[in-house]
Image (cartoon, rainbow, N blue to C red; front, side):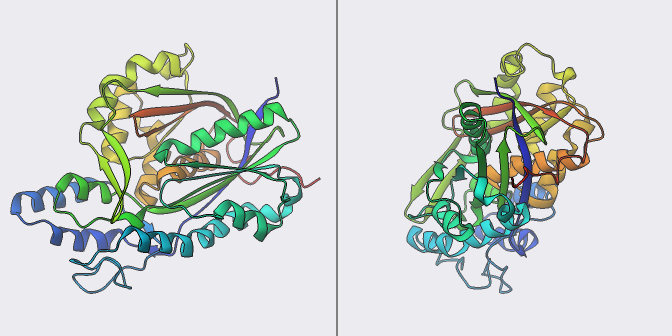
Length: 366
């Protein structure tokens, strides 16, 4: 059977760091001292220093952003938000794709997979990528939508299937999310805390049979028991309405260990040299680390991405994998894991080559 590799990853974020501004203004939506105190305490403990947005931060006390999209008492409707997604998404995609040096292999690209859960329009970003970079109009385009933070692993899974069915295939994977377009005006503490972690970001990668980069070994999907309503994502009249329950860490702590043997295909956690855990938030990472008994050093990439970028939904796990490719001190087996609606756990077993040897490698243009 054809071996399949994640050859290269490029990442990009918008120009505007909005985290400090959000922490400054968000308490204005809370109307009692108890909730205000909890928010400030959780913000201080979030272990996030930077989050980026396509929206420039505001300066007035009642404005989250410079253009006044999120003015207290006048948040926008879904149509306005989707118009902004259409205006901004492709520019961020281009930033990542240019860093990937897509132009050098564009004539070889046979498939394009796009993941996003934060916006939609048609013809969409996939079509714009095809036309802007001169990909063949016969390029097979697949859009994976509304699967949330674990969608990138589903995209890699589909890419692996494509390459195994056609060893000459070169699959371009694009994970693009503008999470900050869905901020809601709310006095619900749990909802507001969920907005404390989300950010915008994009990852672009190439998957093929050429033996450079991370070898994609196997994938598995697992649903944690009685967790269906812990993560939900629905289209509302004022943007997309997300629910992130405070029960998620406990669900992971109790539900993940029984499924670990199947995820690792009979292996043991201590045999895995590299872990790429989706940084859904500090408490998510804490829950996974405790459930799996992982030492701090194996969580460094995930915690670094959370600190520097926040949670960019489907793009985030690719940022973690890129960090591992560039920084890991030795080759060895790895496991990637991301969480989303269900609560679904998507996982990937992979093999990481010598650290730093493949982060800049790409399939030859031929």
